[in-house]
Image 1 (cartoon, rainbow, N blue to C red):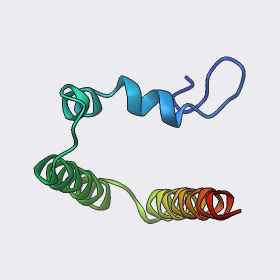
Image 2: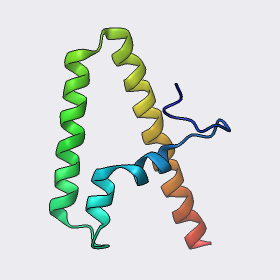
Image 3: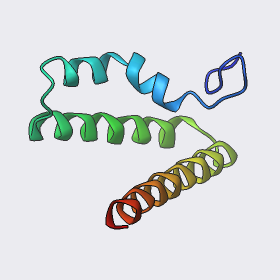
Image 4: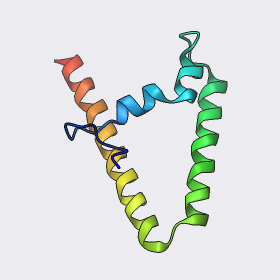
Length: 87
């Protein structure tokens, strides 16, 4: 079962977000409000708390590493875009 990758082996993060009911709800009026961001933040926190309660130490370690590296990728991509904007 491939959840994170498409049939060509490409990471589906963007597609997963676009397919998400929460993203579609946030974007339905093409305006992202502080309340929507707060609500999404609260949902993410709830999901992480559920993982902490449900996963064993090895699973939590793998999730923590994946989330950390995803954060690094996001930050590096943002800095790269800023650099390109200033050049």
